[in-house]
Image (cartoon, rainbow over all chains, first blue to last red; front, side, top):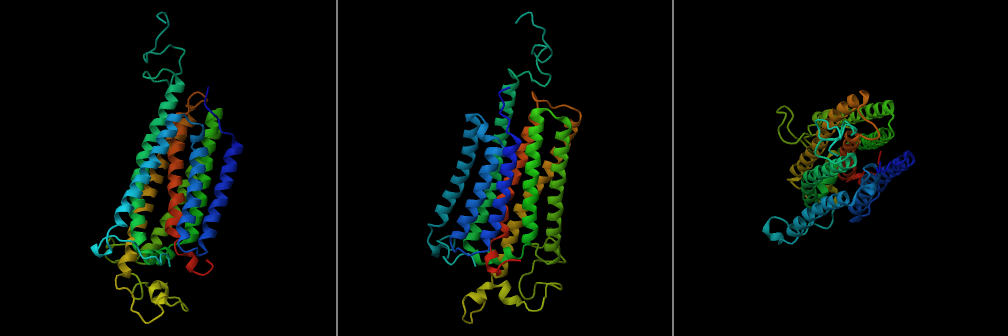
Length: 107
Length: 269
């Protein structure tokens, strides 16, 4: 048996971290950081997701092949988002579609 | 090799009963299963990714409407559901752990706990959806008697609380500009767009939860019958991967849908 068994201690530690970060998500949303609101919210969410993927989903202990598949999945998602946004945000505002969105943002 | 007794699967009789004929050994079978599950999950990432893309674009151009609409969601329920889902991820992870060490009853207990938490999530979600129905916040004309409404004329009977100015609260543009500018006539339809995205994303997520619950029922029965052992427990492991993935989707949905305008409400509730 070469399968790595993640100990219960690690599961509970990750669980605790996820709980704390959930509270952080909420608490941080009560303050206005302007443009940084999205960045902060996503940073916390990504941290939580990485913890789940690495430990609950055992990717940290998986084979390299599995790791590459996982990374490629998120890489393709990044392509989807970045290419779509680079299209929309670089169109002239006069075209009726796209253009750089108003900077006053959330509120 | 030639004199070894072969079963119908083509493996020696000493091989594990769950070893399929096209695999060399149990470890190869397990790793192939994990890889296959992850490839499926990658397609799921792209599936939800398309919806997140729609969310990003519409939010970029309708930040004010999205923040106002987000405040109409029940943050307490969304928060509670986040906690419930993380707890269910823990019990699922523990079910995988107990299947690895071969404790049959504990697998069953953990799977049932996961199902209870998953059901609790869906019940809370159902209350939220019903609340949207009552407040005429279901987008489109799905219910002819309750078409989507937003703003002064909208908010039906119970929401007319004293001391809350419906116009400014529901249309922050009116406050923002200070001067006597008339509010954006398209504001309500831009808010409606948020609710379209909200129902599409949380609905798709809830559908995944329902499928996950069905999967957990099968796993619980298999575990009860003693099908899993330290040598063979791939179904629990792969079911766990699916369940955690659904949890991750919610981890993103909660801040992106519920908390957009929380800082504008004044300290929160």
